[in-house]
Amino acid sequence: METLQKICLIFTIIGAINWGLIGIFDFNLVEAIFGADILARIIYSIVGITGLINIGILFNHIEN
Image (cartoon, rainbow, N blue to C red; front, side, top):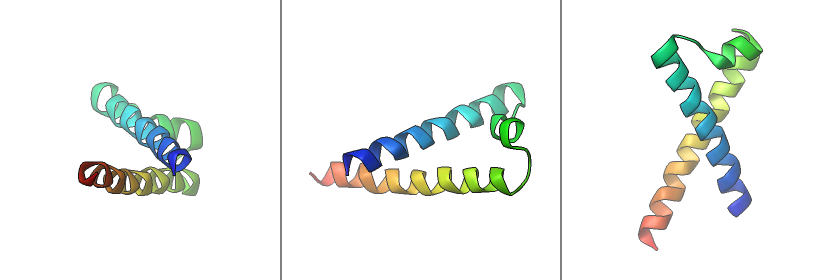
């Protein structure tokens, strides 16, 4: 489970950095690297799913 947590954390950090770049500089790093096609949508979906997994991990740690 620890490996899954680290992978999810990495993707969440990547998503947070991307949103920070969009908010501050109006620059979308994911679209700059992968283009605005299906690959970028897959990356966004992975980041969203890992964010949901992180919510579950957060509540699991609060219970313990």
